[in-house]
Amino acid sequence: MKVSKKTIIITSILILLPIIFGLVMWNQLPDPMPTHFGADGQADGWSNKSFAVFGLPLIFLVVHLICIFASTQDPKSKNYSEKLFGIIVWMCPVLSIFGDGMTYAYALGYTMNMTKYVMMFVAVLFIVIGNYLPKCKHNYTMGVKLPWTLADENNWNATHRLAGYIWMLGGVVLLVNAFFFNVYVFLAVVLVMTVIPCVYSYMYYRKHGVVKREEE
Image (cartoon, rainbow, N blue to C red; front, side):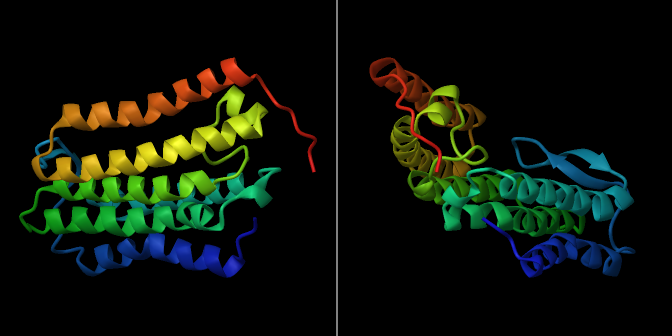
């Protein structure tokens, strides 16, 4: 799987786009700016304006480039689901615009429950990823990477089929939970989404062992 230079340039520009807005609104933005929010949706952490405007998008850019590099260097990158790989490529641009946009809006005095919108975003992301997990073929970068799934393609496929359903269902539950956010419900759902595929993968290994296949 390769990413064109054009795609990398476009996604990188989108990640840094909030910096332009920050410069335009520089005099209207408070210093410090809210950059962390509690479960009640209210700001409980602040950073200086320079870090909020420049630092956050640059962090997203670094993470973005690392994700692309790691994915393209995977020996089994040819097995990637094109759509799931697209999520990786476009996730940081969306997160940068959405996250920084919400931060700017809050800093400029717009009343909103940050937790509600962030949780809705996370829930939709889980649903989308869950939809494509069953299509994610054997690789070393994306998916449920355990000793048993990495050693056995059959285990990998079975685990990701189950994980896909669980992630989509979990995303729906979290989407509903976003409207009356309960942190314990959120933690419980994420725990279920994480633990059940791992336990299932191990039980599959115990029952079927490892079926090795020659590398193409």
